[in-house]
Length: 503
Image (cartoon, rainbow, N blue to C red; front, top):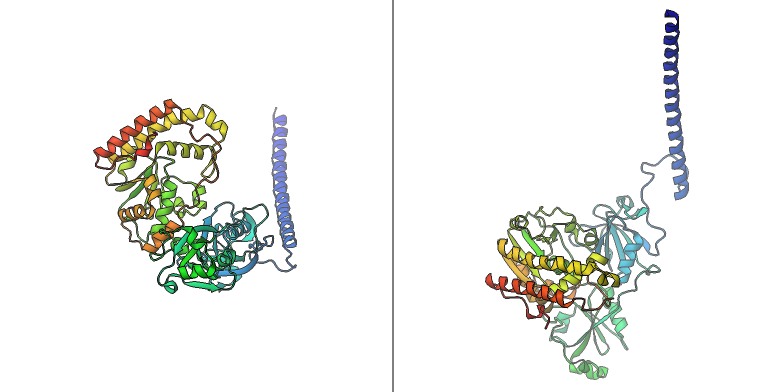
């Protein structure tokens, strides 16, 4: 019995040694293969990038200026973030930023230079930044374009824009703003000018766009470039026939034609976080579809401070709402967007701007957003399906309860009607800014008025019947309108605008 047992023990010892030997050989072989593969990858990369053979660089995969773009790479420049030279058409894209994407956005708005920063930010302008730095300081790879340089921290990779990429949108056109009487002091009101025979709208607009002025002004053969100012604010247009005379007669009559150029009014595009944490926690509250994003655009450009959000929307961040990524309770933003209406959520805020919009319009806007995003329209099949009546039955009561809860639990409120903000933008916005305890110049408010639409207005015709509400839906919504109207009056606010109820 002992002999078979001894043989078995001897066999197990040999087997254990054999398994150990095979495992060690397997690990050594795998390590050698990995090293060989890494060498092959490095050789392939250097061959692909066209690097000459030599000793390995410290960072062999450093990003390079894009070669596939139609624009010309100018260089790497310092950007202090306060007084930017490239401050037009600002947007971000954390995942898909490319050099071509940024160049197209700048070309569309008639800018000459496109600057990319920190791998995901795009800035436009017609003048180069003052301070250039070494190319190695632009070391961030574009988020959506591997091995292409997109600036760095406080550094801009600048490209000269030559033309739009195929398939992208066309350049923005010049918009006629009307006929106006010239101000008394032309030299003071219009900072730049061009005088030449047979000057055209295109010539004048191109000249003013290059100078980064939002307004091109024609009087006979004279071209002026300007901003909207208290002395020349585009609110007092006269009969257009007064500008339709012969050049000499028009010059003597002191009238001018005003055109909006494709470039932005950049006097109000600079924005930042609050320098110190806010002591007053302010909400910008609304029912979905009531224009909260548009109101944020106006507030940010009027105050120069970012707004925050109870939620995170990457699409909004990409369009320049940098506070979208900040934590909503950081108190680094001037106010915080919210659609919440519970007592606990309301009482967390010290005060709030309560934005109210016609529920008929709000419901349509929110249904479009849910079905087709911020800029799209719901398809015809969405309106004809059971989805639309179910949506109305559910959301109409929310429109009412949202206002009622904020009136009941809100500590300090400013009620703003979306329609009034549309009709009387500057006075209403001035009231909102005062509520936020921020001092704003009149020039900055006029700049906001000039850039009032922002990036989220739906364009084009609606692909559905403009009256999607059935009589039953109207009865339901009108009841909620009457309830909210009475609640506002009970809290010493003006009632809802009469236009809210269809007549």
